[in-house]
Image 1 (cartoon, one colour):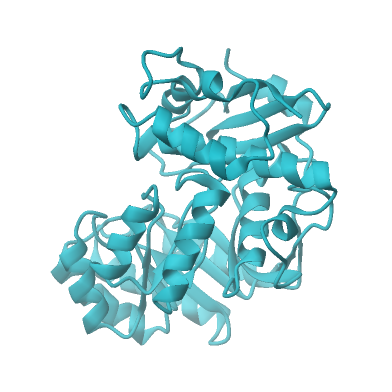
Image 2 (cartoon, rainbow, N blue to C red):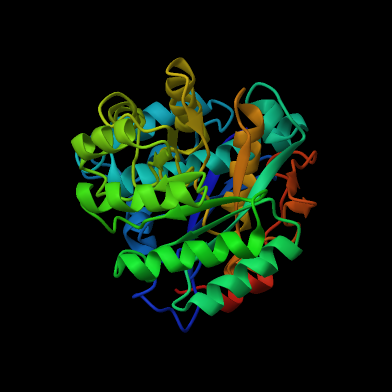
Length: 372
């Protein structure tokens, strides 16, 4: 079997608001075609047109080559070798950032092809499915008012979620407002639902320490990305001075970056985004780093159903996978791009048993939102 074509398809809703930290407004969809008639799909979480250029750019020289030209004619089953070929071929402009983001979506699509070709789910192809269902948390931007936060928390609890996360939005602007938000959310959902807060890089160390005390008082399960991702010394001190789990890593690409988060930043929970960190192949290596250090892994997945499917297979295929992000965005890309969304019931998502990622993309949605 040989790769015959790689498509990098830019999708964007017409009313995109770039002031919102919302990755469901646009995306880069990857499709890999083969001479066996099998097509794999993947998704890149990046600036779509930058990552698209990394895929489509013609070769400049041996370590500055667009990913498409590196892979045409290759055997998609050789996923480990192809990952290294892509990494080595983009060293001049890669090693992290958009080049690795683009590699991530391609790698995801290769695993989809492998699963389809063998006739097994990606989680099984990656070494085994440790669990058939995973607890899912409703993932939402924090609204601007306390009444809206209470209404959303009530809605997600009524939908059966046993965990929920609110992030970005107004968080970090006013400490009293932030405390009132979490107080009302906790009162609304009661003590038995896990609540997480994504700080959205809002504070310096002292601000994060003050808010960690507040969030600990209201039983927040984890505090995510309260500091700038480069502030490893701050993360180390914060992790050592709070009882909260400190989470982060969605900004990072590659094992080396996650090794720094774990060894220098002392994070408790790392959150590789499989559309950004290097795909499922690198995701497995990152999960092993965490396992060796007895730390938790929860993949970041605030995108479309393609990334949610890949993240579900990934979490099911690692020994300590226990939780999955489940975006509640109303964006048509998040809601409608995939025709068989991951099943959610009674607080859990169920791992698809169909071959590959187990999804089919909606061609009508692609044509409606495709930017040429």
